[in-house]
Image (cartoon, rainbow, N blue to C red):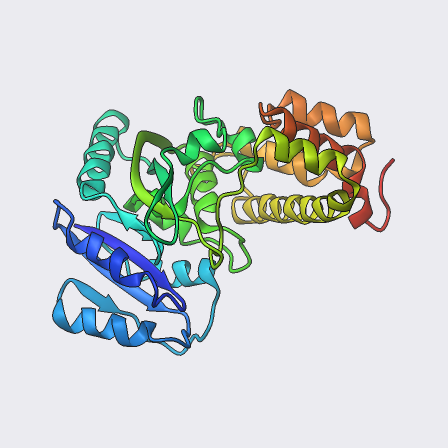
Length: 332
């Protein structure tokens, strides 16, 4: 059995298509858990209608937690997942008819090869617009994500996992449930937690989700063309805005690194986590105590820099200069 976790908020425009695509799956060994995060539109009424017409398959989670935000909403849903496998689901996408069966087959093959360990399966996506028209066929290639190999140091700063493509087994779910409330992205945390606990991540090179891009996305496509990258670098009007967003992005990543270290503090592998990865987290937490050239050396030596030239330049700018602006006593 597979538990599908759907977090909703003001999703009346597209929620029908998402739920209908789940109901149409060629694998029917699933239960759908939905928690609405305080919608002010007709989303709750739509969800109630689906739950009443599909008893036993669709369950609405009603609690007194109020509006939690999308990340904590998913964490709240995870407490209800007791099956062997768990999947995240966004409210405005459309799933391919064979998404469940394809990812389940991939998961079971990975379990045969890797035994009783945390496993996360994730796939590519295609992008569609508000009218369901195809924008492009591969989200991974469009964003130039580095999939091979999936290395923990690089993944710390460059998330390649989109939550709506994820299937995790029960072993990984037990670790992800330890996620602190102030984590920014549940999918990034899930991937990092998997590798930190000596788990296996498996990429399925197939678009199993039609990923909708529209103005109301919580998180959307952040890819830029070469022209757009150059324009951001050399246009002064965009420079300060981009710099501000970049600084906040890395501050959030550094907060997540700190939370990982606090959640998995044991460097001696008693809890099953990788001691070397824990030591890396400690180095990164203390990186601002070092002078600039040593900060870059730590990042280079551990393989944290992305391959993409633009992302590499931005990361260099942050750790050489920009990041000092957020600290009271910055190290030169």
